[in-house]
Image 1 (cartoon, rainbow, N blue to C red):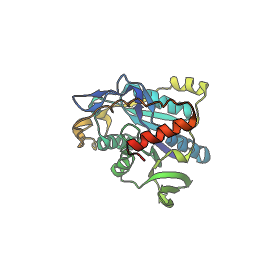
Image 2: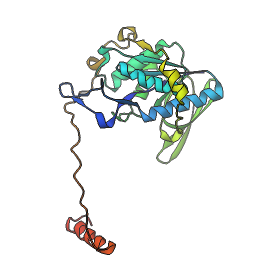
Image 3: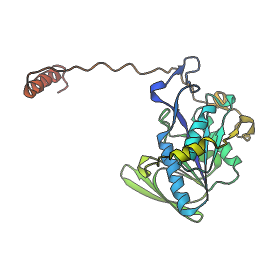
Image 4: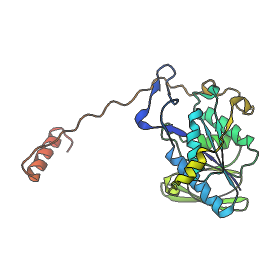
Length: 261
């Protein structure tokens, strides 16, 4: 069983910076973390490998520092990792990213199951996983909370607003998963040290196949016209009173005056 997991290194939310010229996030030099939903995807892949055998390969696209995210996934237990990195890929939107990752996965020659996190916490589009499936021409199931494999078939439970859909599919198949599917394991210190010595394969834009004719910003139909940080949160008001009852009365008066209640 060849399982591919797509992960993304997202910027630490306390260190987000913007390029005012291109209206894109500045990623180089900004501390990054593995997208939390993608850790669930890695954990799901590891649990399936423990049941069925095979190999788990983790793939990401990003600047050179994205190697750190891949090494964290290797420390969790992934077997191999591939970094798609090239200045020509900078500024890619969800579509351009999907095309690049699909080309990288296709270059692996064999993939039975592709697992992606439901969405990235920086973009929140939830489009890259389905986009990869579209580029590869394979079926997809989103918001999966349970995965069972039986030879060349998969049976998954897809979360809906009313419960679960049970979906059966042949493979190769792409699924996206949320946090409800599992609790990601923590790497041991020993595994982290081993992962830091692991050589990460790097794939440049020129190595991606013909489906990425216009990589990066040039191949991205989405245009962000303006981007800015949210305004700082206003300081809250502290109610001083002799007793809890007086404090409650004062709070109710303030809420009533402002027509909140």
